[in-house]
Image (cartoon, rainbow, N blue to C red; front, side, top):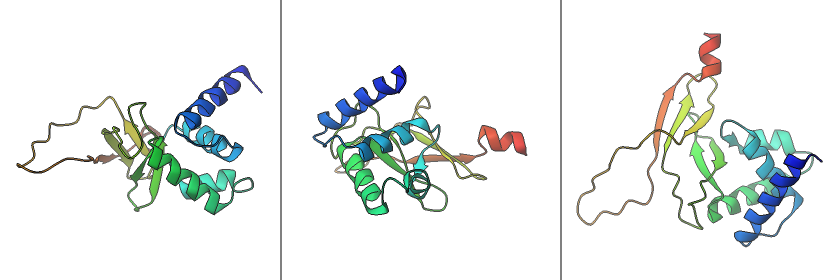
Length: 148
């Protein structure tokens, strides 16, 4: 095991413990796969990667608990498939602060978090309360743009 991987596992172990989750190899593996990807990853794609080691029901429960605890956030791609990306450190249980633009490629359907893009100020009518904000930008990612 490399020093970098050992350090990541320490961070993941700490993250799970901070959120009151038992540290298990399937949870550590899912965190590793999600953080390893440049774009958000769907449950079906995760299943293809970890399917030998983690069954579908366990994977679903892991993703649900991670979302509930504010470890990952869910973004729907153009086909309506849920994809998952790591949350910011500001997210807490049942309260996500990952309010940023998501870029979805219209060719490969990859979903990217654009944390550096500012969101517009949303002015709500009186007695309205904003709980979340989802803004998706659709276009061609760098890889698909090279190919077309």
